[in-house]
Length: 283
Image 1 (cartoon, rainbow, N blue to C red):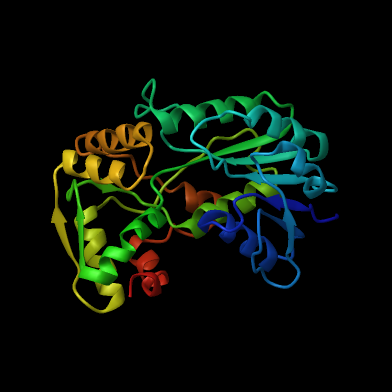
Image 2 (image 1 turned 90 degrees about the horizontal axis):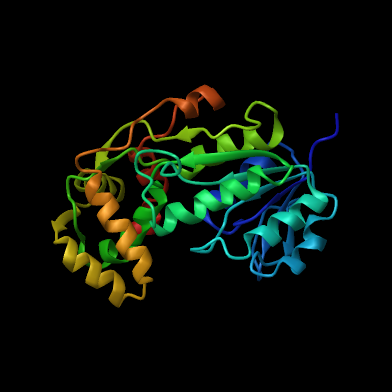
């Protein structure tokens, strides 16, 4: 049986990069969609294209069987055209969605959930074989603390006791590889989580452990955090969606499951393992 040729979008990001690496290690022909120069292992084909310009995707999709789709925008505008172009070439799409879609945490008008919900709808209506992966919070988002940790050995943030089952990008990638290369997850929307609920205060302590020096969590108010994010240039609709949703998780934390192990045969990696893998980013 011929190995499928797979196009990975978001290939220079944490999750897409891990998908590229795992497919390549498994001997699966893989293309990485890039907008500029990027380094990949020998044998990975980097191809130019931009999800914001559907007409630029035809060459990248030539001869492709399946696509790993990471949507990089805060709205679904233009997504229908992109999925139409994918459908002209490929037979399968695996979409990186969110655990907030379709669950109790989905709120009308919430910016992130809205575009993921619309992308899932478009993918399911496309006629393609599809899988929608629904991960909980990304462990990799804590890299947003890296500059502060390097400079001050502290993290100033709200919600010290917010506990989430953060998931390692390598585990999201491992599930994606199963969805891209086997039929086990066709038409599925698996919610995938890290192995345990872990507070933000504990996350910071584990980063300190990984880099070999104490790092402290300095709690600020939600209002302070909102103003800081806006001042840093984050879109208001994103700020106003994310922080209140996180505050609600204090009382209603995300459930933890063993879907990563069920799908891949390997238990999900802990946040301690993630911090060790990324210690260099915080040093």
